[in-house]
Length: 346
Image (cartoon, rainbow, N blue to C red; front, side, top):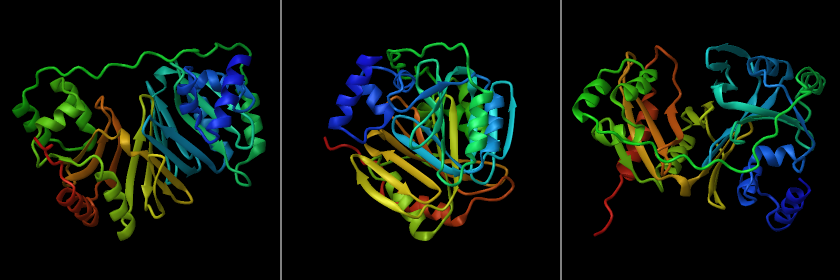
């Protein structure tokens, strides 16, 4: 650990604002091991009582919730409100904090002290799943201390020191494109899309490529996300921004306003209660996706990485039983017209 601390401090002296995830990658360790070492702040291990812990977050008052993957970071201020759980999932609903959590792989949790106290959850590979940060002057720190005491762990399992081998891209089996398209056209709810993929044995990227341009239109990956966010901000159209990893999905519903040009490869939304950091160079493909539902077509912009994993999804703000916002569909149509995927020059 002392060697890791020394290497971390040496790295910070040359790259002072490096995020823990990126620092761990440069140091050839896991983020969980880095946090457990105490170099990012004194780390107290917590008991892995996941549903009870998420439920207890309701006592903290306003916090900042963070969920990320390699190419997108989603930060949302607000309160944990309606929390429920069932086999394999924890659901958090509310106007601010909106989460779909899948704790099957969760293994480690730490309360991290410092200028920005946090509770950080990691999976069995040592990758960050979800984090909750105290907000100065707003979070109930008495409740925070009580939560740390209630969940303090006496016996702990050390997180892995070495990163897991990257998972290979999802294998693509032969798929009947016509049958998949017919099922896609018969969708009645956006939540049925994943089940459709499973029935056909198709990956998301494979399905997007087979469905036809009316249902899944490839866009310029270097421009589609920024153009969509810029148009939504300019027209004050409320949107939904989904960012997730294997074990958590976090959702923002509302406007985006303050957009910042790419800095160090990241394009940013920096609003008071919502921040999005999008590493544009990680976007391997972008798509305009249309899913039929009982409420009419639902349109999204989907951003995928080189392995076909979802980086982020953008929708117009909507509620079940209500049709999609015409203003959102207009934005997507503009992006599709202005930023189609152009064939590479021969």
